Image (cartoon, rainbow over all chains, first blue to last red; front, side, top):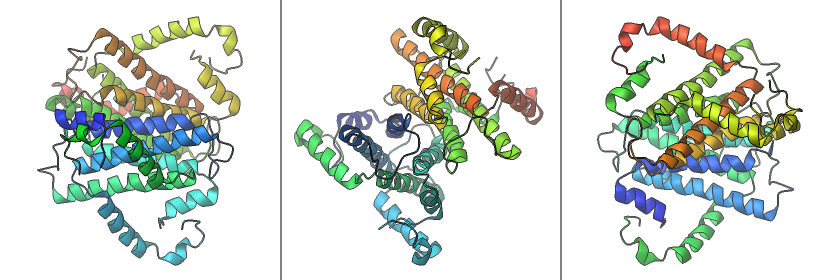
Length: 103
Length: 103
Length: 103
Length: 103
């Protein structure tokens, strides 16, 4: 599901922790996109299409290494997400979130 | 879908970039779990159940802020993932990945 | 010069890279201070004395692990700084920086 | 003392927090150097001279943005360092650190 030469290299060398180090690197690349931007208006009005495309790819790269590193750790992220959402549903009943624009 | 008081606070104050700053904080918390661990064997044999539970929660928190920040940016992460996988399928045809344990 | 049990543990276990992982953790702690702050006005007017104290300690912790990790790598940070400043002095002659408040 | 066009841009635009975002970016660049390296032997035996040079520059860049961001915050890092070392001298008397190779 998640091919890629870099990840393959980590696997072959048994450098599992390298996935985490790569994750930190990807977060760094993401931050470089924003370092001259100041506050970020919702939906990024005024950004060029190529800037948005670049951002989308960097966001995805963070996700990619997060999923890979989770897999290395034997953690099923989707189960973790479900479990936490159940806990949150108890802690934060829906009516408290009315003001949020989340769908 | 993703309630939580902290995120709600960011929304109310118009501090969208705060989501990214929180993402960096969560990656930091994740790294603190590993700072005394050395190389990470696949599946984390020898880790205690509560350590794995803690790790799972931190991994999820990174995912949570990644999804929130993507949403702030108007980026649909799942579409980004599909698009990148299509690009990768062209760049890395399946036979090259045979050695990988990815499913 | 830089004692501390955590660093000592890294040394003993030969986990040199753990210093870098700790550095990432400290940057994460630093970011947690700013996650609800929005833009940061110069000199932090309006921050409480204890907030400034906490910030000062976190900034120092980042420095601490940066110095430790540099030492592990055999890099003399002060020499690196001098060398880069010389290069910058060539690339950015003083008159270009007149507008800067840096001393 | 620390010229540079990028920092100057942050100053002019009043984007002080951009210094912190740049710091995160620099830590990301540093991590990219190590992502395929596994554990790091003290002094980096076997690394090429150009790799060490690159590393030295990235370590320095982290220092640079740390100093800049501290300055933005009105924090004197050298004072913070002295203060913390005094506290540590009380918490960790010298004899406890005998085993450390720190000079």
